[in-house]
Image 1 (cartoon, one colour):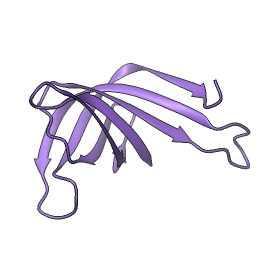
Image 2 (cartoon, one colour):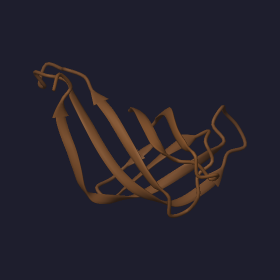
Image 3 (cartoon, one colour):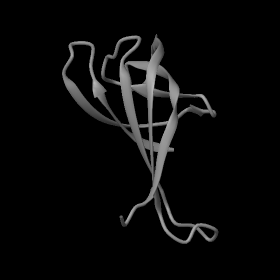
Image 4 (tube, rainbow, N blue to C red):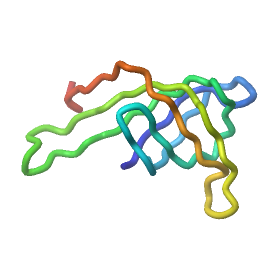
Length: 97
């Protein structure tokens, strides 16, 4: 699932990066990331969910979590795999709102 990631990089500067979720559960999410981040950093994710036969309007899902794991990648365009522990709250809105 494509997502927009926002937060502060390892140097403390704000960043935005498009990536794809590789793993998602009720309490965690993982994704490849080019931008370096540190353990404990807050990261915001926004995913656009398209309209389907069952979903009449497209939705925007917003999640926030804290970095709990970073693993360097040996291949591919992204520098590392990042895992977040998700906060308990999220927002789900119509993309048109």
